Length: 187
Image 1: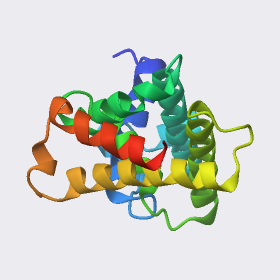
Image 2: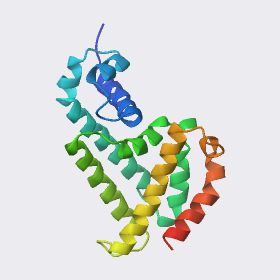
Image 3: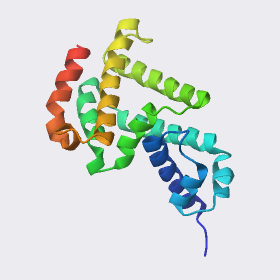
Image 4: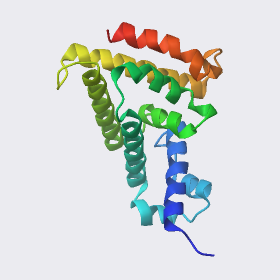
């Protein structure tokens, strides 16, 4: 049987992203990831050097996904983008898992530093897209972080709780409340 390195790497990333997002960094083992991807655990070292390297790559792909989603987006599109990303379990679970990956405590200082750095960069980009100077001042950054915190909280509640109507709200149902939230926090 021929092995396709690109497909194997992609499968490992998808399984790792799911496990890291749902269970956290510390709880996830390389064995869990390899078994989920249906490959030998040694391939994690081959493609990513280590569990930490795999986690870094998961964060990197999350950044790439967020950048691609934000490409050309104007501030008025933020609520639509959030509604789409937050309701993704009915579509692409990787979108929601990207958000969850950013908030799961890892138990590893280096991994947590990577996550904090990414969240700071996202907050800054959001503040600047809302019209703040670059770099944004403290108030603009705080407002952007409040919107980001609300989005991350919604993602966590949708993924872990059966709290209706939030758990099953559709993109269309979430759009108006998210518009109101963003407009109130970042006028």
